[in-house]
Image 1 (cartoon, rainbow, N blue to C red):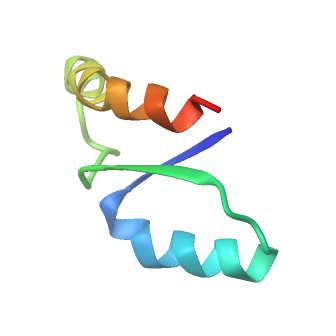
Image 2: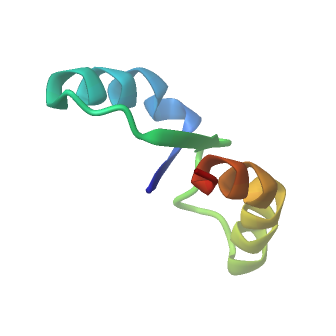
Length: 58
């Protein structure tokens, strides 16, 4: 499992992980994402694809 979030939420993700006693693999993408076009989101996904694969590897 890999948790993906934008860089705006780095500290929140760490705090939540500690609070839940979890240590998930995490990939952060550039913020913001909510106003991006479909093409921009695809480019963002392509840019972090290798990092996601590494995070998924056992």
